[in-house]
Amino acid sequence: MTATSYRRIAVLDIGKTNAKVVVLDAGTGAEIAVLKRPNVTIKTGPYPHYDIEALWSFALDALKRLAHEPGFDAISITTHGAAAALLDLDGRLAMPVIDYEHEYPEAIRDAYTALRPSFDETFSPRLSMGLNVGAQLHYQKSAFPEEFDRVATILTYAQYWTARLTGVTANELTSLGCHTDLWNPRAGDYSSLIDRLGIRGLMAPIRSAFDALGPVLPEIAAELGLGAPVPVYCGIHDSNASLLPHLVQRAAPFAVVSTGTWVINFGVGGDLDHLDQKRDALANVDAYGRAVPSSRFMGGREFEILSAEIGPVDEKAAQPAIGPVIEKGMMLLPNIASGSGPFPGMASRWIGAEESNRRERHAAACLYLALMTDACLGLIGAKGPVIVEGPFALNETYLKLLAALAGREVLALPGSTGTSQGAALLTGIRPIFGAETHVPPAEIAGLAAYRDRWYAAME
Image 1 (cartoon, rainbow, N blue to C red):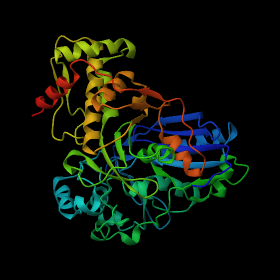
Image 2 (image 1 turned 60 degrees about the vertical axis):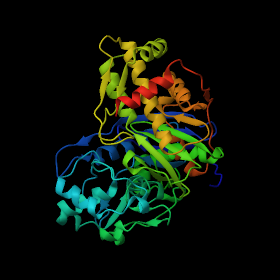
Image 3 (image 1 turned 60 degrees about the horizontal axis):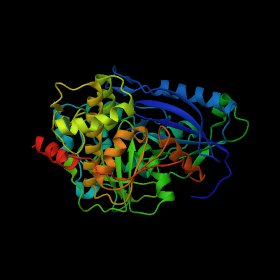
């Protein structure tokens, strides 16, 4: 990664829940402008799919507005994983970009399970719905053969948006390496699934996340009102975007807990030898092409559901409720969002919550999230300090509980998300961290015994 002289970076950041365009100041790392909209799924058509044209219209409108004020001189891209774009010979979508939460018919699921490579090859567990991109491609090819015959190029999702802006098609390692079944991280090459699906010739060339693929196409530049050529960088999977600043700045070992719709946990400096595929542990691939032990659960979605059920609670007022929650043995068991996480196949239920108030339920929900995160960190053998970034970095109750459970320091980073900041680093600017909140591990009365009871309740 070489230093550049960019002053402001525009980042197109498409998450599963929201899409946004952010302008970051290269000198301070601050988000100086943000425009966003919900990421909507269209339920009609061959299968549920993302409203790509609405996202494109939003992106162009946002870039046009932000080009005027505050302005930008480079563009980077980050998106959620578990998505691929299938293009025809004209470079248009040959098939809609499928929503990874769509579940396939049982016969197609079974056929794919028999087809996919072993965990020892890909370090990608068999996940539900379309969370394995290989399962998406198999479904699209099996259920819609005529439409699939029109596919000329397959792109990972972030690189689809780069291609729309530049006309240059590419694939990239962080998106290929996020539980797709398509990548062999030890070999640093495609997995055997590529040939089993017969799609090797369709895969776009692999480029580094740090590559500038080209300037914005002239007709788009004119529409945006760009006064000079603006380079567009290849792009990166969002969780790996959150990881990148820490890889640049810190020495291993350490753990990163990247929170959003998903809570993705990275054990930097760990090994791949003890990952349990049945508990949603896997290898991701970082921006430098290195495998990183990882684990995850859908914690942001779960907390969103819980918060809607519980209602508004003042965070500081809820913290004193931790003691009563532990004393009562009030607890929440996994999983609120099914289909992923370290405790598969379990259905969520409350224990001892009948007489609880809103503050206690909120504290118990934070305790649940901390227990789930701690379990995920244990699965990847995470060592060193735990860095929490994203929305959960603002949740003091969660941070204190996680530090106590993990028995080591937790560092919380400010800001709503680290994905945009990480994606901006692809342009060669240096990472700038805001003031970190250091949360040392402090003993919380009864917490160790509570954790034992929580695990016992799941047996």
